[in-house]
Image 1: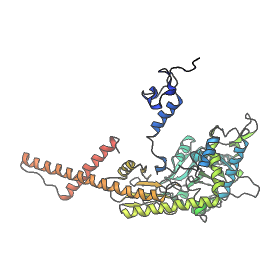
Image 2: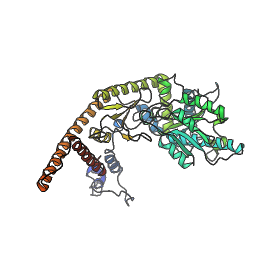
Image 3: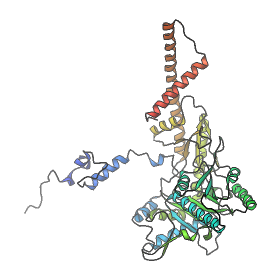
Image 4: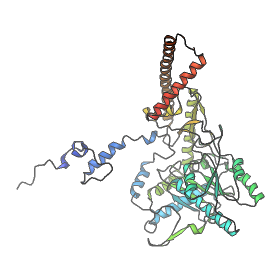
Length: 502
């Protein structure tokens, strides 16, 4: 008996993936198709589109970790099917989160006894952590005002204008006024003196940033604490401080241990930090840590029992993957103080190498600080012919993703390019980036010179035309001609951006 059969046209198992009909036709983009397709074809179709994404390792816009060790990658994949909220079903994962909370709390010098457990929670990035901290401050302030028989309808938070958008989201979603200290040219973080001046009886907290996303600079939390202590003593208020350490919380303890910014300062009641930034874990994991149990109102904590046991929870969401929590624990025990210090020192050294290379080009002003998050933020000295946005656009041709952005109020006229130095950004890549920036500048210079010659010719031709038609023409001065050229260049640049090219 013959057990084999002749393959038919419909037997897709013998065909090459790229020869199958599933990759020859367009698939529906917005509606599900009626029929299934082979798993190989589905993978290949999606993978082909994803190739058009930027390379994460060359994404210098992001603070988020883009590389982890293979052993940790395996742990992540082994636990990707665990729902963290099932604490009774996954007790070890719950224990690992608690260990992380305690390790981070001790790292931030929380006033804990030898056997005292820290107060904190793992979150989906610092955005959720900030919202949870903000809600705790708001509820404590409301309780205090109600106890004093005072209105609690108009709470506010004092921040710098350089805060991340998650603070604006919290303020808008939970009806809290955001009072922002404006920036100024050359000073791109919150001024503690101005911040304390804006504090009133309705201020639920002052938010300081340990590592501004604009230029990496640490705000002076120590000075803010001292000034606020004085004001609280005079007014009788007890306005607290929250430290947004999303970017700097896993940097300062290791390379600036003498810097006082954390729970060593009495008014610092809560801190958030992003494990997926310099905590060295893939997105998204954040941590919210409170100074003591009294700083987290009990009425905000929910107790659920329909998964097997009583489970206290203080989160905005319910289901959450376990893999990032496990990855954070891996990094904390794998690296220890020594490992984190070595990595952060290496990042800082590479930032200095990049900064020196950019300074040698002699076309930029450096607006970042050496002490802060390892990054280099820089601005063009001369914007006559092109801008930072043009440089950012052209660097993409070399694979680099370098963001260009304008500063917040009142420094909107300053435009900046920023390169974040992560663990996987090597000395070689830093040197390569400097070379590519130089190439881009030369090409922009050449293009600008050709455009200037072309525009000058147009101006000259217009002059000759006026002479022929009118018998005379008003000759522009050299300065007027230069202004006309610049204006035409700016018009051409604006038209380019409007067309979506830049």
